Image 1 (cartoon, rainbow, N blue to C red):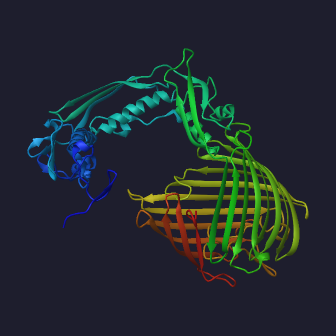
Image 2 (cartoon, rainbow, N blue to C red; image 1 turned 90 degrees about the vertical axis):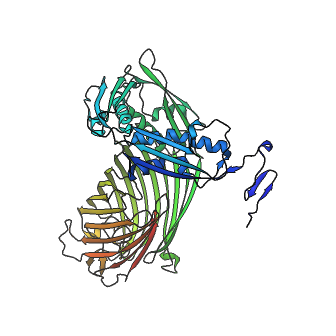
Image 3 (tube, rainbow, N blue to C red; image 1 turned 180 degrees about the vertical axis):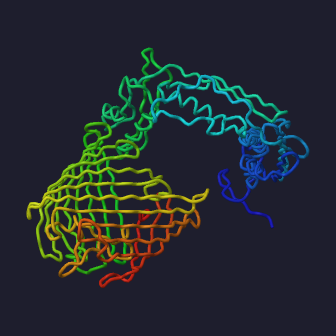
Length: 617
């Protein structure tokens, strides 16, 4: 049955529209392809896979080329692509043939007309993999005296006698050898010469790399381009590249991270000059693109235990030209769990962040909020103000210290009381996770100390809290991930009735002990349940990817809240378990967990369903 085609104003809308070449349009050229890869005359499935992945003729065989010229161009370029793939597999003794009708494509003159459905034959005949014979790096960098300047030894990356002579190992050895010089201040280190000889009789590849370090460099001026509202002097200062300091490529990476952390740039490009100045200074050019000044966001949460919630924020990224961020947040939750507006939870807060106020790595955060929270165990109306300093010691290590004042009214098992609290808070956090929302490896450790004074009852109180999370992926494809979490806390200095409930420890909810109500696990006291002065929580998950987008999770959580400052396990230990579904959005997994309490107590729900973005921990 003939196919239909339709074109309008010379544009083919559907079907196959053929025109004469003198009309300026090129007819599609369909073709077929066969491929054979042999090592010493025998099929080699592994090498064939590499050739298939490299050959565009093979990969695009179901897509017509742009006429005979396009097909010839595609095929002739395949020689180079296949050769590169062979070198990566350490095959330096090979023959590559791409032919049509018994004629080698490389020998066909330009303008050769190929028929429709021409069959191209790709044949690769290779010898066994070569091994490295002599591997030499001339003019190696001195041994680094500090740990941060150390670079991996090329031998440990496969560049040594007897190892498979992969082209990638040669390239990596050159990169590591120059990186070793760059880490010690030689910004323009390069591979001056690369001598490679193949001994076909011995099946060996002899390689000599000669490194030219150049001269030692220090940081010169940083020229800023692309700013509109940001102050160029502040942007240059935020790089942390102090004029006269020794060049270090790690500083450049951290400089870009500092600039991205400001939250005002959509793109950042920091480039060093081509040449070092006569004084040894290396100038830099920083090109940035500013994001829109304002941002608005909204979100929603849902839980069969806690009800539904809505939240939103308004953000100004750059108030006065130094990336000052002013943010307002509001949220309401408990919708659906009650019909009374008085029982809803409310929050309204604002926060002003002043980046780089003492050092490029130190931010000052000034905030305040008012909130009403209604839980099963207590309700509160509270206002708070605070000032904190956040310092970024490294990519993994951050610290926080500040002061706060809060005042509020609480209605709990002890009655209606008011508390006024003023105190200090200091914390340290170490994070090596590969992802915040969906980690598969690394650790996350956090420790917080919080001494405060409560003036309504006249008590000095101390609070300590620590949490550790760990992740480990199994298998080469890392489709199975084991995750674990441990959290502990203690409070000392006052009795339960003289400490605000939101400072006491409670457990339960979608990121704590699933299957129980949010902050619904406490200690039994006369008349009901209260938060405790010590906490111990643990969670374990097995996360399994079913497809690239769908995953399932099996989990178990355990929590214990105690009246004393040290857990003695005299009260109930609550355990929840369940299964979850994950859908990978690219930004983070959508989470849907269903859990049941394994030792359900009076007042506990029969089950809980939790939804959100990102893993539970």
